[in-house]
Amino acid sequence: MKKIAVVILNWNGRKLLEEFLPSIVRFSPEATVYVADNASSDDSASFIKNTFPTVKIIQNTHNFGFAKGYNQALRFVEEEYYALVNSDIEVTENWLSPILEIFENEPQTSIIQPKILAYKNKEMFEYAGAAGGFIDKYGFPFCRGRIFQSLEKDLGQYNDTFDIFWASGACFFIRKEVYRQLNGFDEDFFAHQEEIDLCWRAFNQNHKVKYCGFSTVYHVGGATLNESNPHKTFLNFRNSLWMMTKNLPKKKLFSILFLRLILDGWAGIHFLFQGKPKHLWAILKAHFYFYLYLLKNLNKRQSNQYDKYYKINSIVYYHFWKKGKVFENKF
Image 1: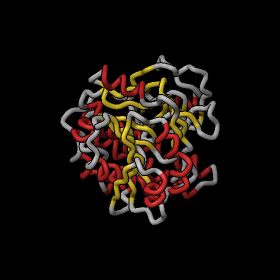
Image 2: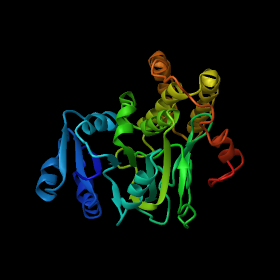
Image 3: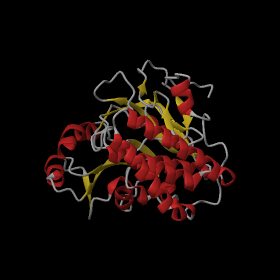
Image 4: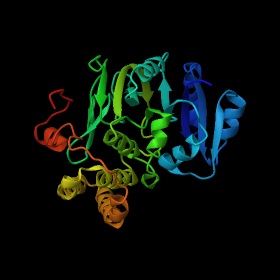
């Protein structure tokens, strides 16, 4: 059995598979390649069988979304390391070798992210993950190479290995034993920020998350839900609040959540002035679900939470008031 499994979650993605699966098959000789199909209604499964006979298909019974879709599929995958790869990812030659080297030589490193560049502009970092992720005190995510909508050009500034807080779900490597120990993704999230929640839970159990800039992939981004979709705004704000409820240190839980709710209100007003009332409504809806599921998420809390989970007090202040556009190591 090969040590690594590349698992692509698919839902009605025949066109994406046709475009991007060839690079994965070609450049992944070290891996067994799987497609986990979320009950697609197109001809994705037959296309794979006829065109890529070496690719194994795991057939989920429903469209479970990202979180439950992977949880269901990975029950049947026994390779030592998982590479969870979006269907709109193009990989490069030898992309797996540096990742495998880290896993083999650093037993405390449990999760890894490669360098993620934009498929449509390959000189630029891509929004979803860039060169590895962090969060601020109030749960807002940002990356080396991307702060909110400010994206950096790849000039080799992140050609390194670096300890990070979260790895992007667009291309997410994890040890099988750790994934199962953490019970996988939180299925209530459906999609968006479930990978940050998983990394935060791993952090609270003393697992290391690392970025590897010597492995490169290209991501289309927004292939399932684009940035202008109010439903994506809803999922991001709701899931962020759920994630914080589950993982914040006990002594700071409600004070930080209160301030985060205020910052969300500011974001909603910002959307309103931009002429995007549906996004304001999405935030209000996210807050309703935060209160509705508050007790359930409090009951999901682990026994241990660390105080120093964040890289900077407020990335909102740094970006919008201090006009900071790039990641700074001094954070």
